[in-house]
Amino acid sequence: MNTSGEGPAGRLLALIGEHRTAVRAALDDEQYAVLLTRLEALASVAPDDGMAVRKACQGIRLALLALPFGHPVRAALDAVRLVAAPPEPSVVMGARELVALMAPAPPPATGTPDGTSDDILRAPALSRDEAHARCGGAAPPELIRLADPRGGERYPQFQFPEGCGSPYEVVMRVNRLLLADIDPWGAAAWWLSGNTWLGGTPAALLGRLPDQELVGAAAALVEGD
Image (cartoon, rainbow, N blue to C red; front, side, top):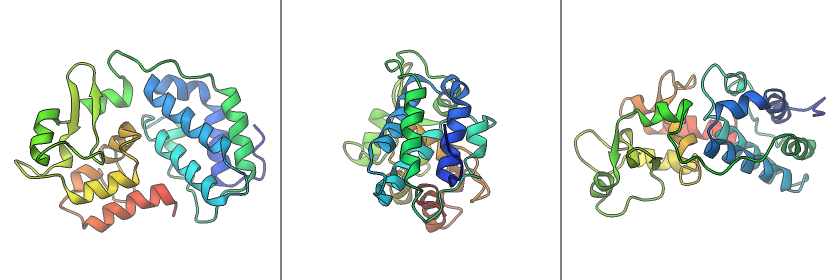
């Protein structure tokens, strides 16, 4: 890929291309399909539509949160920040080259997710019936809902107050920013991973930090800082 003279978004695409084999190995089929979909979305936008280019780049960063810590691309995410100015139009061409390099994802796996996904599934969670009972009906789409082949639908427990009660409003706000209805694994990874901005794991900081700080940290990821 030719990314010479490119800004942060171009450098991120270059990292994906350089480590594409390791990226594929670190993601399960569903996660890899999400990443390819986000790359294809960037490749298909008009290069002079700065807002569309920037939103597509944000989607790619969210998809990469599923990579385990220590992976060369995941480790670089905090350093490769998407600044307020839209990426250069050449990023779209870079995405087209990258999509051509990366093999199509196979169909979603029917077995047990591995890597980061398996770690997420080990976190405390509510069953579908328990989550619906807490919500007083069907759970809203903003809640993270994970498909566990071993135990059915799981709703990570951090989304709800201890003991009883409906979901945290701040969780719903952050999940909307993280597109949890489209990429629940990426959203769960954000909540359950260490965050240098917040100085801890977001899920563990619920009720300890002002809600606006959690929202701000998610917005910084999605919108760039």
